[in-house]
Image (cartoon, helix red, strand yellow):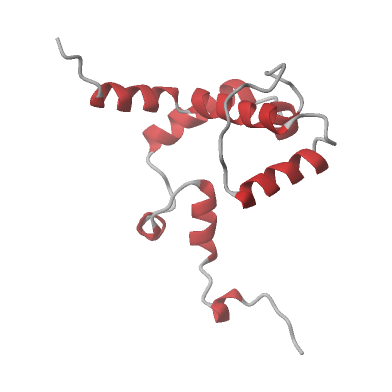
Length: 130
């Protein structure tokens, strides 16, 4: 029995799958051009390079603890995400960081990366009464 990685025969569009993982959910965007708009990509690259230029993934998310204890709030995530995050912590971080601290680091990075976009969208929708 011959097992190959011939994805064309299976109908798998690898470029589309890679774009989804990179955060571009629309297939049309990939077929039009491979170059994202310069303005947004440059702004994001500047933000990324500001904090993460010298930091690896482990240094950025899995080594420093921003939380000293678990908060009193509960959140629910997909079981497959919980398993994936737990495995990352167990294997890459050698169980040296808790799940809630890892998620806190991820959220802190997300808010830092998208602070301007979030603020702009919020201000567009929020209108004071007076």
